[in-house]
Image: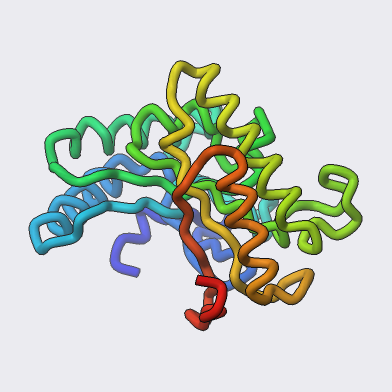
Length: 226
């Protein structure tokens, strides 16, 4: 609100907003990169034992025909901008003494393009200690893995996604132990009771991982699932 010069704009110069009414910083705005670094260092100093970075991406949900970037040149691939930002964070925080983690869309585990938001798994993972794909089954498109409603198949969707991500990290000379997926504990596409939450956890264990995080936007979790 105080630095409109860093914001994604409309063609008429007003602040662009997505469908939820959120405004966005231009991902290529280097001044904001430096600000993010300062906030990260301050967070560590007051006691946070991990720094998790979310929304490391270009906007996508809104009127994309009326969007203007004042910092991104429109020519450099979006994925290169996000990779450069991730490298900037790692360089600036390499000696901070706490883990760095990044949230990615769940589809980054199976897609090799940047999903039109600049996220490619292999570009981002070298710069973080943990990669946290949001493998919420409800967020996969109809027909994914042949399922009409992926949300109704949490075990299959999560296992396939994490298995593919593991294979890709190994192929990139990295390690699947970096993966710490977000799982779903909210009703969308299906009712997510303890059985549905546990199916996601079991899928992660069956791929050979032991770590996950759970999300519900209302902060009301299924107690007997944990």
